[in-house]
Length: 586
Image (tube, rainbow, N blue to C red; front, side):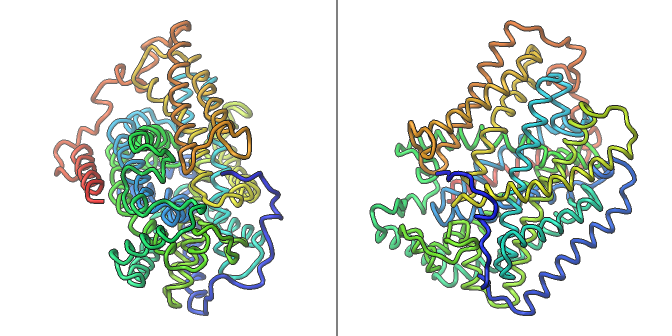
């Protein structure tokens, strides 16, 4: 359920008391982390001599660096607060966001799609759309992507500010400005290199922070068996009007009705596999420039292909340190127990307790000082990584795909470098205001999945159809995108309780349905328009369409002689087997 938008000040009450009782050791750890982050930005500035260095790290980074940065860029608000909130609310079905809704698409990106991105030497996903479909699709994609990044950056900034507020007791608007200033500093100084090297650092800080929280939390509830018993007892004792999922739905990932919103197990599986596992997942991972940008910074086509595959290995194990703490919080933290039973407890990061507070409240209750400071640094690292990824992707698309192509053409490289830095400043300021939208959602995943359904699902339909069907025309490219996006927005309005409310799907069911509708409508409109419009000549499609691209252009010729674990396809096969095993095991 989406609340009406509220003004920024309404979401930012002054906080006289801190949510987390930190001491000098905790503050010192956090201060050291901030100093290190800014130091990376200062050092990275030395390597920025032109716009390619600033926006794409000079295409010089090894696969293990870009692979860790690839996954760390995604370890923002969605992964940490959003997934722990889902874990607290619905339990094990949240694992589908990783094992069904991420890893298969990441492997597909590395094996099939990265050769086209990297081999064509494009600087962004919208630029690829321009080469394949021309101006119409490029305009729609560039502007919709820029808007989406400003909205998603607001999510990460809102939660980053919430952590600063919880630690220091500052009013949230002050915390937002301070947090934004830190992220702005290191991106403006060092560009993508600063963002990527900080993301590698942040990955290890996040794991070091959340692993102890998971282990201590499980110990407090009596291990995995104790957690199962407590969730079962809580579900049986919850009031009938609280809307709490049954114990079996919370403790079994399939068929996942608590996640999909469908009562029918068959419809639930179809919704998760098609809506999340195919449309939303492939739409996000294969066309989202936030992620693709990290692979484009690689030093070779082989490294670019392996970037998302290397990222898939830690990705499949992250649920254990993100979702499980949320499940523990739901049965261990007094306020979360009250919330799940239909109450309205106070004392959250921004007033009333929400599911987004699950991780913070668990940290407050179970971590000793020292570990508490490390955990706070880990959360700060996550939100800074997420916001930095959004901002660095935005400044690239704004500078190359909007400003250079439609506002000021044929200027010097230094000019576009300045525009990129100014865009970084502007995006950070705008994110302070878009943070107000994120603050109105009890579960941040509802907001994020809605945005992905609007922007990523139709883009994936256009992208995949255009890559494998050379007949698809430029006119079909932009009309399909527009039709798909409008259909998703229409369905969301019709199913939103605060709007038309012609129907209602609980959980993320509405987001899944909107994304699936956008995908199908985009395909239908694209095919229909293609039949009555003129395609591009085949000679202009080399490197953009599979059938028109020589196979030798899609692989690194030096890869064949390397050990199997250094080759793209075998490495992807190992990851796929592991994720299938995890699905069966849980």
